[in-house]
Length: 453
Image 1 (cartoon, one colour):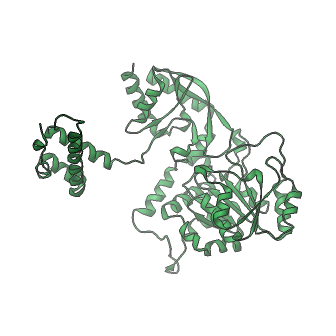
Image 2 (cartoon, one colour):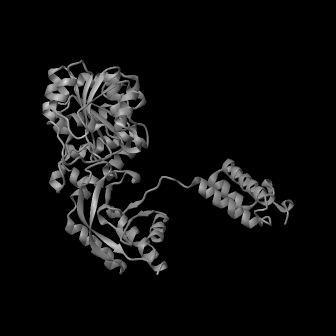
Image 3 (cartoon, one colour):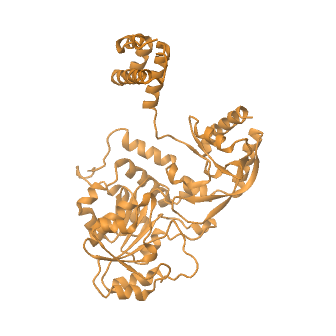
């Protein structure tokens, strides 16, 4: 068959299949898909890649597949069976049901995002989270932007542009995506002043650097790696007091943003946001979607006069959080305020989940599937928080012919399942699988195990 047998655009649009495409996808996209497929066929035929022009039914199938591919969402819900609680590649913190409800309530119609219901005049979007943050942390003021890198950039731009910023060499960290503290400082216009050595910094190093006027003294918490061995660093309170003696503000970039004590759950103590404020830090920055367990956000708390300077900077508008993030953040913070975060926020529910309960779930999965074995393993917090720390867990270990192929099939489901492979087995950790996802997970596993026997 030659290209003369190729149906025209109009001929294809007059079919019943085209009526369905137009109803499902709209006429403009349908027309684009039809032309695109016909163009592809012409190119393949003239280049000799195909010997015959496809039949009309096959062409319709190509068009149908292309329309589905173009309109299929690329951001979808997945089942996280890896045991990594804050999985950066899987969206970090899952939101509480109450938080999702708050987001829906604020977005389904109009909201008072920047409207003062009391005065009837324009208000500030910052009020929706600020009061709760002040009550939780004891800070004088608060500001929310779109992520923690943006928070650090805004702090440096507002308080230290053209000024010296003193920071130990051991804290010139790189965060996710290749962003580095020195690069953020350069972007803000601040002048980086490195003190101490990679493994040791003393109070005298700060004192020597403060002999000249400085815009800020800064501390960046090493939330995504550990330094062990021959190391030394003065207590935070001592550094803050020294900075204040030289009339220099002290800024802490905590990164992970813990409001609960991780030591309670058998892990190393992660510096808490409230502790930095109590010890006298002037400004504290942290993330909303790590240990806080909320949406992506950069949170800045601290002295009112310094926060006011940030709010007035034009950059603050470019970095501001949207209404959905603010609704989610305020709802998440309320759980801390009401002291039910451990029960209501998924991240903390996973951290606090007892080993006995995790094992019982893994055993239940094994019994329902009639496959695998329940073995000891480890869950991790992840997300650039508590490096090197793990939680004991039990996993369902599946012995399959090809772990890589089985894992690929899991990822290719309508609701993708993300597992991990270890020692030739596919491991599924109940700690990070949401309760409402368990039945779907077991259905997927049962089907695949039957197909791949």
